[in-house]
Image (tube, rainbow, N blue to C red; front, side):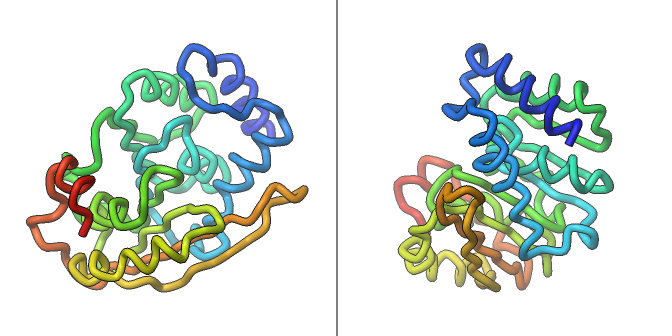
Length: 213
């Protein structure tokens, strides 16, 4: 809780400088950001995970929050915005977290990180078909990708059938949950990677975005 308090104070103090979040009320940050980030352990036993990658982490959600609760994890953050990477670097130092790598770059360019992580997570980054192509190549075979979504996830799941097939992956579970204090219904989509991803994926981002799988 001390680390979350430090996190909250630093987030609010640096928010205007880095444009990190529209939410600054303490209760809302704790529930909509912190509690929501930790929801991942509802469907993944994080005690049995060694390496995790957070794609498009922004202000560190969910990756840094998960790392605070599960300090044994080796966390890699891929964040395309340089100023947010700067914030994250300062945050990690302030919290005294070890085994955290912050990469200023795009997931589709991380060829050297293919099949590197037990778990990849992404929260509020893009639609599921796009996320799958960005994230699945980073997951180890027999590992998982978890997408943190809102309540209207079923359409995205339906649109992802072709992508899942082409990426040799399958949806293991869709889990809905209620945030505290009536802050809404959110969902977790847990995707299992069955075999190595074809080397042609991920494509260039302009192709991923204009022609999702």
